[in-house]
Length: 224
Image (cartoon, rainbow, N blue to C red; front, side, top):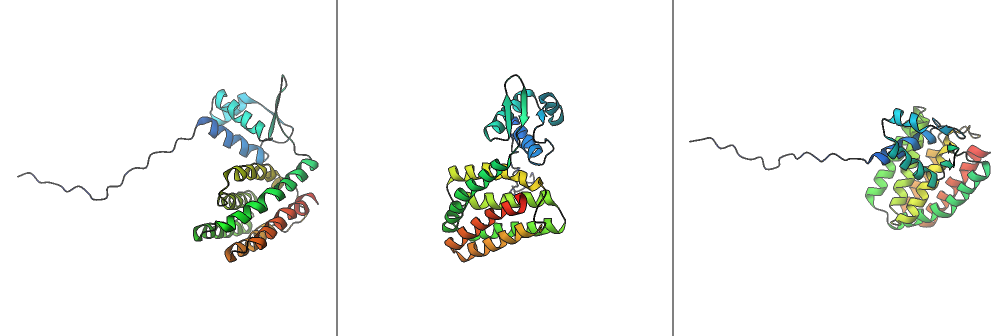
């Protein structure tokens, strides 16, 4: 009589691979190059070089460029090419003013929709930010700061405003690569930790004030 092998009760299924569209790959890669100053303000973008560097065709590169143009990170000049857009001092001040209008409001909504899972994730991000500062990893600290803000705003349950805040945040990331007038590198993480304490207590008004202070401190740190 043939031997029957029982079928495992919980066979491990392979998770389907996540395929990222080529245009999204191009967008993410070029955006990172701009934000980290691998492509510097005022520099002309050479599409052919980008295609070679990123191993992508012209079509996804062009789609990414148009998306970055809409976000204000590049400028498409007819018959002249593509320029990495420089942020002026006035432009940065406008960004900070816009963030002051949107982000404290989203913070208040996030307090209303707060969960233990959200608080746990934000706490982990703060600890990761401290570690980056200890290792003098400025780019890593920037990424943690960005994740903290994005996580908080996604919790507000207002996708339209959260997406807008993300665009403002992305443009503000360039400030991380300007010389700081306030050399206290850990100040940013300290501010987020104070904000987290208000979130943990569920104090909506205090959390809003902390976010206003946090964004307001950007001008002192980077613009003097």
